[in-house]
Structure formats: C-alpha cells, structure tokens
Amino acid sequence: MKYFLLTVAASTMLLVGCQSTSTIDNSAGRATVYEDTRSPGKVQGVGVESQDIMAVTDQMMRDMLSNPQLMNREVSPRIIIDSQYFTNESSSRINKNMLTDRLRINLNRAANGRLTFVGREYADMVEKERDLKRMGVVDGGTIRSTQATAGADFRLVGRIMSLDAMDVQSQERSRYHQITFELVDLELGTYVWSGMYEFKKSAQDDIMYR
Amino acid sequence: MMKTKSALVTALVLTLAACGTTTQNGYTGANPVQRTITNELNTIVFIDHNLNRTDITKTIFGEKVSNTVKVTLDRSGMSNTATGQLEVWTMIRNRTDYDLQIEGKALFFDANQAPLMDESMWRRVYVPANGTAIYKETSLNSRAEYFLVELREGR
Image 1 (cartoon, each protein chain N blue to C red):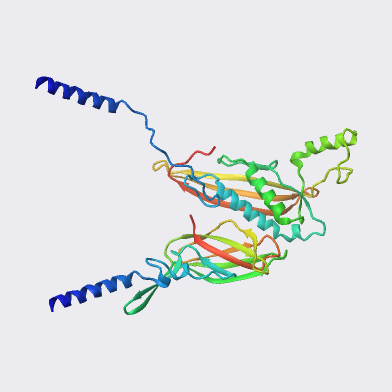
Image 2: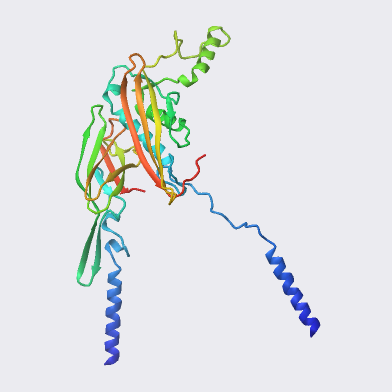
C-alpha cells in the first residue's frame, strides 16, 4: 500500500512539473485583415491617418478643379506639384509625398488635359536623356524635339502644422492639425489658389506611427 | 371547458408574439423602411439608420409606425459651378441636444445615369446640438448630371 501511494504521489508531481515548465505564449493572434482606407481603422491615434490623407487630397482636388482662375484658361496652365516646398512643421510623423503625389495623380486623371503637370522632381533624368539625344548617342525618339523643357506657371506650396495638448492626470491627449495648400504664380509670386484642411483628434493613449 | 380556454389563450399569445416581430416586407426585427426602398438618383439618403428612420410594425390592431429623427435635411439643391461641375448641397439640422458629427459621400452619374466613377471621400460636417451645418460636394467634371449623396454618423 505504501509503495502504491508513493508511486501515485511521484506520478502526480511529475505531471504537474511537466505542465508548468512551458512559459511561452504561442496562442494565435488576430489574423491580418484588409481595412477600408477611407474610414478609421482598428488602430487609430491622434496623428494623420489614411482617411485624413484621402479626404484632404480629395477635397483640395475638387476645390482646384472648380476654380475658374485655374480651369477657365485658353491654354492649360503648367503646374508643379511635389513636396519640395511642402513642409511638415507638425508633431506628426508623415511622408509628405503621400499627400502631394495623391493630389497630383488624382488631379492629372480628373483634369484630363485641362491642367499640365511638370515633373520637376525628375528634371535631372530628362536632361540626361536630352544630352544623349543631342550628342547623337541615341536617336531623337518619336515624339518631337523642343528647345527646352517645360517651364511652369504655378507651383504648390504648403505646410502641415499641429497644436498638441495633454491632460497630465488622465494622459488624454489631443492634436489639432492644419494643412495648407497654395498655388504660387511663378512669374509674379502671387497666390492664385489657396485651400486649407483642419481636424482635431483626441485619444487616451497615443499610438506609434512609423 | 378549461382545456378549450387554455388552447385559445395559447393561440392568442402565439399570434401576438408572431405579429410583434414582423416588420415591413417580411423582415423581422428592427428593419426600417429605408432598408428596403430603392435609392433614386438625385436624392440624399441616410445610410446610418440610427439618424433618421421609419419602422413599421404589424400588429393585430394594424400597422404601427414609429419614426426615429435625430437629424433632418431642411433644404437641398444642386447647381453648376463656374467651371461646369455639378455641385450638390444640403442643410443638415441636428434635432438632438448633443453635438453630432455627420459624414457625407457623393457619387456622380452622367446624363444616361451611368456611373462616372466619381465618388468623393467622406467629408465630415460638425453639427452643433439643435444647430445646422452645410454639406457640399462638387463633381470632378462637367459630365455629371445626377448624384446620390449618402450620410452617416461620423466615425
């Protein structure tokens, strides 16, 4: 009887010991899912997010397309839209090209030739090809040859700015964003169109944007 | 006699229970009228039925109509901009004692009512308690002749 009890006690201790050695949590996490980029997603904070980028560029595009000074010209104006003079002065981490590229691409598609976009960001690439053509290393292509590359009439400038506030006790924070877009006349230096987008968000815990 | 009475009461209770859960067009549960009607073009609709809806419940005494009205549209209109685009606008009235955020999205169609693939992003409008705000959207080009605006509570 003694031996039997000892065997049972030893087996129980062994089993308990085996079960408690595992400390790694390998339970299944949340599966990857697609989300609607036009609406707030599951992970959201006080920074600039996909729905903000899409809303601001859509609003600016529609505003520019309904501006008679830009759209009612006999010759379609040449515009530079890139992030060269578009600065981020806010406390939000964001790739400025996401705003300027989306604005330019959607404007180019919607304008359908009523606006001409100059790719100044790639001027170096164009000059290199032109030099090769002029030197006779490559032929002249099939389109045409021009004296010079396109000069622009207008260029996009703008800023992303923010104002942060935090309740030290509750750790609740809010961020107000102001994003400005303006088109500058590249001869006169005047503003021909201006647009602004504002929003304010608050959250208990901020998330990390990368 | 007692058995007959019990059977009658049971039948009545069952009938009432069945009627109570039947709403319009065969839907059961909370299904507002707005869910089953066709959305005509040149209209502004609430896709968030918590904002504005009509529930019709069939009872043994007839149809019971109940309206939920948090937000109404006081005025709406459409016009063309100086550059020929279609512009649609509506005046949103908050009929609650709380500030509300409403999001609107417009879809535009050509003269043949074919989609122009011109769908705006959600535009957020802040409507103060018992106050009014304007939602306005313009199409991308002058080919747009019809619109459909969808409104929901801001997320």
